[in-house]
Length: 423
Image 1: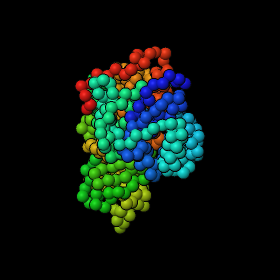
Image 2: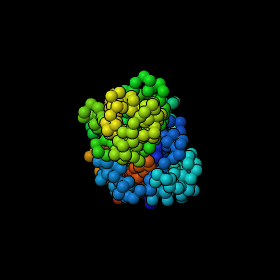
Image 3: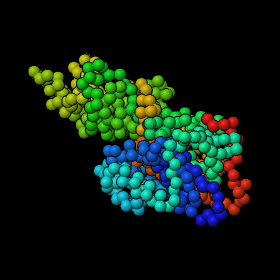
Image 4: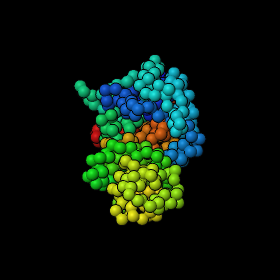
């Protein structure tokens, strides 16, 4: 525990990562001021929990870890220390009972995010957290003080340590606007461009298909890109597609668009029927049946799935049972671009892990730690994204507390920052 009086630690950002970092600091007896740009904290968490807060996932640890793709090895220590099991225990300690859904996803029994956030904020308040809303971080002053813009004035704060947890660049109306990128680049830090993750994609529909099927869910299918297949469903939008299965593949789709100019997504519209069975059924003489009735009886396809075939395939395909069966099992959908970052659920890109040490402290800025979506990692929805934010927030909070507890003089612990002014 810290015994020597010192300035409070500043946590910038009131999302899950920032709140978890603050909790760890408070647990170590430190004084903490949390600064949030919006009028209240946890706005993105509340939005994500409107249809049921997906806290984490019940998969085994190695499978959960694999969901973090190229950054799995880097983020592994933080997840091992605070993974799905620990998150469930943490929620239960707040009085929030959890359960595992049929898909393996873990939810609060009450489903919504508001009871958990409310209980969390009460506990943090009881431990002494001071929350300052409508405080926008604008960078550092030349003497190292934080520059914070408030509705009434611009103020300067000199904390004992700083944890940056201001999110990525998605859903800017909720607080994550990505303006911090410019601030960190002025510090000569490597920041990968922010890109949409867990997002929809554009595809060119015919006017008829858009008019009749925009907003329609396409259920019970398998989506494949780069030989990686995901079962599930997606939603047709006026501009293309979105939905859980699409989000899971968004990193691969985005990469293919970047390298090739477009991505080819393959759809299996009848996962429960083999190619041979489909071919045999479609080879049955059609007789006087309409094409729609023939498709329904032979394949079980109707509505949006049948119309997808008509929208994507030349008319001649429907005269060849073998070719049509192959198309149903592997219907190609060209995706031309991800939807804008402002529409995405989360953000790819961010501060390079090469710019921080294993404790998430910026190498060239002693006493400044980073957590959450600001770092260059991404994960799909399904509880993985929130798990990563909570785990990194916890790691940064504990690391900042340990850094402050080193037996060094206050002058040695100051945060030397040279900045020509706030960004």
